[in-house]
Length: 440
Ligand SMILES: Cc1ncc(COP(=O)(O)O)c(C=O)c1O
Ligand SMILES: N[C@@H](CCCC[NH3+])C(=O)O
Image (tube, rainbow, N blue to C red; front, top):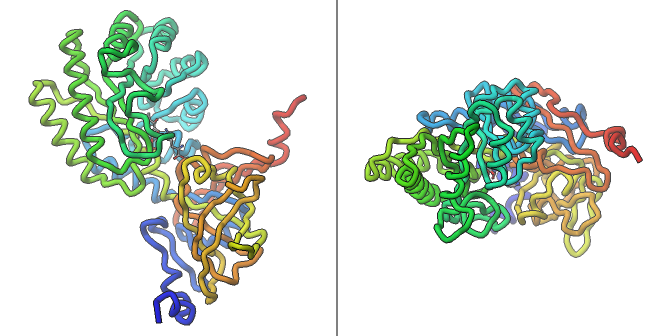
């Protein structure tokens, strides 16, 4: 008899175990088989806040922030706010001593409302509208990372005093991730090339910044992409960036003091290995070029919040066709990542214990697209039925921030949970919210 055949008769005790690689460490299974999230029963959270709902384990976010600071005590760790930008989350990371990477006036507005110290904020992006730049200057953000010659000119005209700036560079390093989120190679829209034959390259950018008396260039930035797990890619990028710093010194007599290596660390990133190999690579490159060690910034987003979050859905219908479809009350409006990047998720029954045999099922959403699939072929108990709760782990990053109200479905609430106590961080979007902007 195989293990799979044995499972039903074993009361599915083995199948019910939570994989620590997927679920936040504070997740447990309660006496009646219900999921306990950061000490709170998911059944109670669903009853109180409704479904679908994003749940976020505050302790895990803080733990990840601390892990980064401990692994890289010499570096500035800037949370990439695009991963999850709410006042409470920004407050937590500010309290843990992190800086903040923003990429729009809107993100700066949230940071400002959270009281995030302006000096610890960076503004990124290949497009910054004049409103974005004015918001950044108005709040006095610490650094603005420049991405085009037009932007250099525009910021030069808007800035007063000496706004600190970095230049974003294309290091020519492939992080080995999905094409849609690869940003360290030639031929994509971000950054200035290091290649002399490219018209808008780093040399032109440095010259353009130096021609603006209102700007003060202090460093270079690069970002390889997102969901990068290869530490060697960062090591290569670090070497290329020190080479670029030395090139700027040689060409312009300007010794830049900052090196921002971006974020993009995958959820299962080898942080200790990254810190160790980066230190060696930077130490070596700086010593052979007799270049002073720059102040390092890293910008993790996903790695701080992804695993801290789960989404809870209510099962609305189960269809046993050529495949079994478990249709829930959310979908691609709260998680477009499977459709965008072919991302894969797992899912589990979250409200009760079931002895029924596990069968592969498709967890699908409520939207009018066949591609609206939340989890492919996940083992769920054969007796799953309408009214059950389904939990999907790993939804803390780029879910709330990528959510839409497609099909006029209101976006879910974000609920923070700490030591069993839940609090509403972002409320559910209502029909009134949906109609509020429809003024025609
Ligand atoms: C400039 C910059 N920094 C940091 C990040 C954070 O990426 P991740 O959430 O994958 O760590 C991004 C997004 O990819 C980015 O564009
Ligand atoms: N939005 C993406 C990744 C891009 C990160 C920001 N540059 C995601 O859901 O994974």
